[in-house]
Length: 231
Image (cartoon, rainbow, N blue to C red; front, top):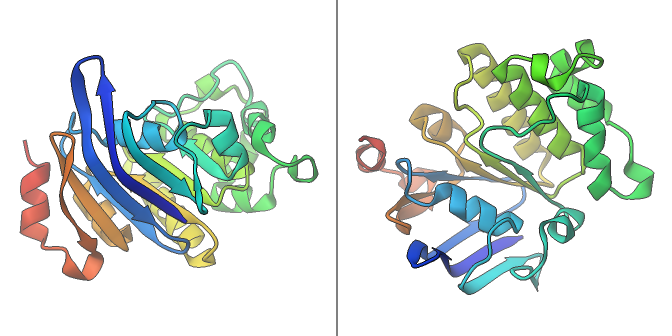
């Protein structure tokens, strides 16, 4: 469904991505790993349209979407959960979820019960402001908001960052459930090795803006991957 083909990305004169390629298929989780500052977030922003690329292609369901605006990609089924969550702190949980309606078809402009099944705390806190939630609850809200759009590609940028262990487990279970449904491709940026290893079907490891290791879970050599994650 998603084929990122040899993309380059620059911030001014600085090259952030160097001929990076990645594939993501429905029913599979593709994990992107690497140290801080190696280009992982730049890659996610390029996929979702928040950063322009200088070369290569981003193919989504047979269409090159590299020149499309973020909202046009969202309308095509690409949902982004950014690093730092970026929920609306003054809106209620319900209102935050309903902002996902903007990318949904008119008939789908309601919050599916499935989201409350995955994250029961959201139903309990519907009328609480987003800014009053804990970091972990805000992360669940950000994922729920993305799922309201009925995505076929879910892009998650470090969903476990700064989150308490109990909620990390909840997020892991939710990702596994979405994978097992079989109709959604998932791209997951993660530095927490055990979390990534347990969820990954396929993976790439980045260093200095380039892919240095890639493969499926069966081919992963743990010591090689860990050596690229340690400072």
